[in-house]
Amino acid sequence: MNLLVDPGAYGQALAGHRAITFSVTHDIPLNQGFRHQIMEPTDEKLANAYIFGRDGGLPLVYSDHNESGDNRWVDFYKRDDIKGMLKFHNGTQGRGMQVINHNDCMILFKRDHVRIVGINKCGNGQDVWVNTATDNLYWHRNYRDVLSNNVQNVSSQWHKFYLPARSARMWLME
Image 1 (tube, rainbow, N blue to C red):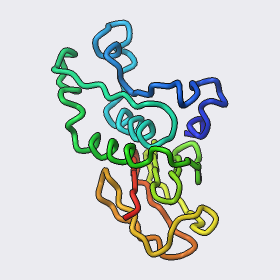
Image 2: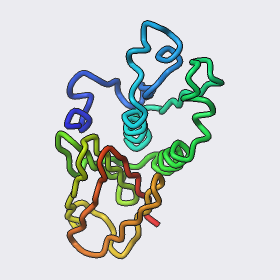
Image 3: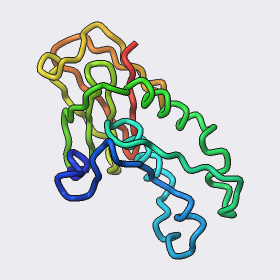
Image 4: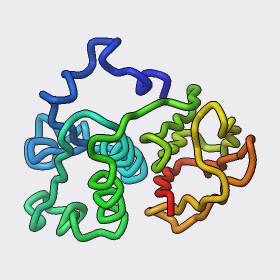
């Protein structure tokens, strides 16, 4: 997860204005030479949360009519989690991004003061304490997750965001 803080620094990313970002393209499930790149569904969801949450790149959602033969991506764009991620993404256009905290298991970043993304790849839940004053999060506001409907009420200088194991949260300020 540490590598996701600045993927361009490791030579792993195009400039945001030139990139198309994705977790799956038609080549991966449909071309035998790439099928080994199919992620476990939870990892694919975490990758999608990162792609739709961060700035830079134009996200691509792969969807099919079961050409892959495993029903996994049939009408993928109609899934509630993907709809929530698209809602989050569409509302963040033009907003800056700042990584608030990260380690080997998780990354927490914000899009200005109105949107927050937390991704936990590890098998244990993560408590992430945020100094709302230095990280410029508004007090007495609710932030609602588009994926789980979890609500965080930021009400003081220090706020704890909890990231359940192997999950993502994409909070919108209400």
